[in-house]
Amino acid sequence: MKELRSATQLEMAAAFLRSEEAKEASDVPEACETFGIDQKELFQPQNAASLPKVLLWTHGCFLDGFPDLKEVDWRKIELGAVDTPQLRYSGHQDWVDFAGPSRLVSDGVGVCQRGGLPTDTPIAKRIKEKVDAIETGLDGGKTYEPLVAVEGPAQTIILVEGHHRATAYAKRGVSFTIFLGRSPQLGGWRYY
Image 1 (tube, one colour):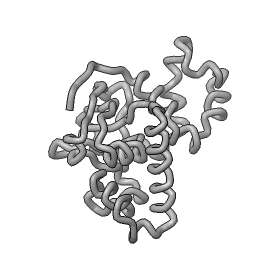
Image 2: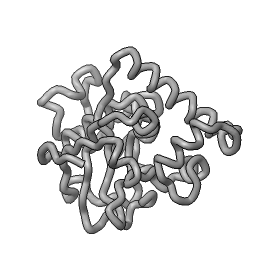
Image 3: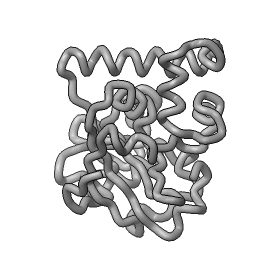
Image 4: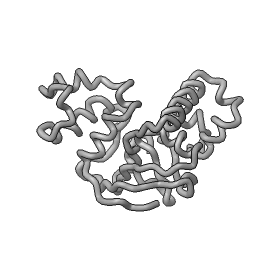
């Protein structure tokens, strides 16, 4: 793990909202309308202060119990293959079902590589399809937004956003960047 620099909640929120996963599952247009923002200008400097509000509007249920974003210390970190054993999926039931109770990304990689149960479930098939698509993108030179994660217990890193990309990166053994949050109140997050 290599610390690159400190980061802001605005950078983290922008990376979260720009991610492929957020784009396909989000109600960003409705949030922009609610906050009086032209969606085409969402990531312009004049709207920077609105990004955390849009993030909470579009992903509030997932972030239930998460501390106020201003109270989280954010850093930009580079992770490599050697860091994969520390990386855990969020406690969302889909990811627990996919990787097992350990929630380790390395266990998710194993599921993708060996096939069979639980990859026979509809959720696991969808996860594997998305991971495969990201790998195809990596093969074609595509770059992706940094992941978002928080420090967990016993020096683990718990994903907040970017589960599919983390799995693809771990399968490939490549380095990637994350925005890593630290706060004593993270234990109250629903999926910690």
